[in-house]
Length: 483
Image 1 (tube, rainbow, N blue to C red):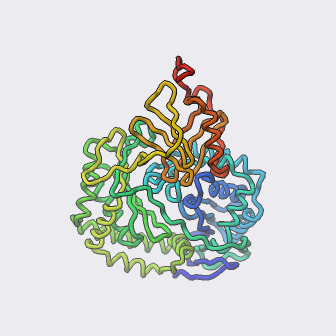
Image 2 (tube, rainbow, N blue to C red):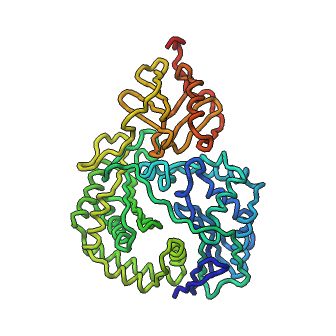
């Protein structure tokens, strides 16, 4: 049975387990809390905190997630206490001399990782859209930025502890700074209508992938729906489809489904299964099988202490601790009709990522906006040797008109400005629509950039490393200065 208590003012959950003792300290802060200009700040702090703490013979790991950052350790009580005490000590006295080195480590990690694009299309360049963006904010982060982030989020009031063992390790001291509880951010939306779809660009890493996601109410029957959907898709599409259920602190959950090989008919197959389940055509045996497997997994997780992290997350979200018997009873009561209700809600909130080259979406699905509805008012500059490409900048923002397509970033809804030493700029709006400004492509380009810099706060600027001269956009050879 899970027991609730406090350790140095930090709420904690404790339960005996079969197997090795382990524990974790979690903070209610993650990628969703980061503004685009500070993307990577939480991950950098996490790395700095654990540097040098894994040498005591215990198995340790740490993770920066969407809403939470946690530090986990497995081993003897003494080693657990030493590791978590070290985490708290490092948060109070961050090893500033390691900042540059850890930035390099994170950049190396990022080079082998491709952000998934669906979060950006659903949420924009804010809160839950952040997983779609690389950690470009690392460059401008200084020691004072990290300390301010720690003061806001890595505090006693914003933490919870879980211990899988018979008792709290003797000698454990959670010496954390004082602060306030930080609620999870409210999810934004860049989708005017759902269900929606978009096609990946041809040169993107995920260009051939077919995926779907949705956001529904967080509840046990939604988790069962996700697993029933996986079984149905794998059976009907003839390939192994994986789904994932991601609970959020805001009492919602994200469900994703990824089809690894999107051959001919895959879109119709995926959306056909979703529509069929929406309409209640669900195999009762699938539901009963998933319910049984889920109950078995809950019982096993209870014995090994795997439910404890989730209970600690619940404490941080202001929810109570749930016993395993209550959780199992809720799952056992789920019916095919319950799954059908979730299916209908999931279908209505869906977002489909189609492979590159897809030009038409499924019937009843609306194309997600990849451009702006209007341009700002201001001075217009035609690109050299490309009369259909026009840059408009004025008091309210910047627009790029390329044929019939319009991309606009307004200054009051600007998430970041990427700034290169050669004068290139890339303004990214809260809706994730971006406007590149390359001074060499326009007459008076330097003056345009200077005006943009004067109208955008310095705090929105992300200094980028120098570009390879060969990669800097320039007019085609032979352009005339009168163009």
